Amino acid sequence: MHQLLRKLWREEDGQDLIEYSLLITFIAIATAAVVGSGANSIVGIWKTGNSQIQAANTATH
Image 1 (cartoon, rainbow, N blue to C red):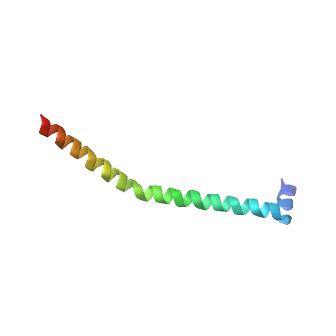
Image 2: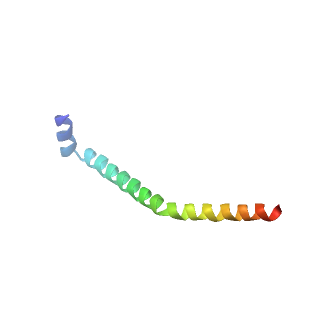
Image 3: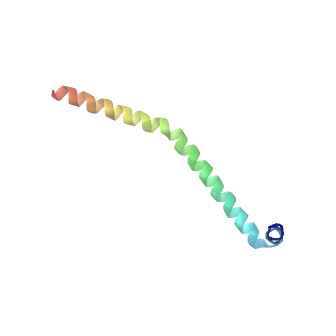
């Protein structure tokens, strides 16, 4: 394992692998942040729709 890490450190191929790994990690973290911040909006839309459906159901009876 130690030899593999040395080889990756010296060769430029390993550098590309690390850059892509960091890029994927950044995208995953950014996606999680966006999804997390949008959760309240989704819940609000769901509650509004549900209350409108309940009101329409009550009005028809």
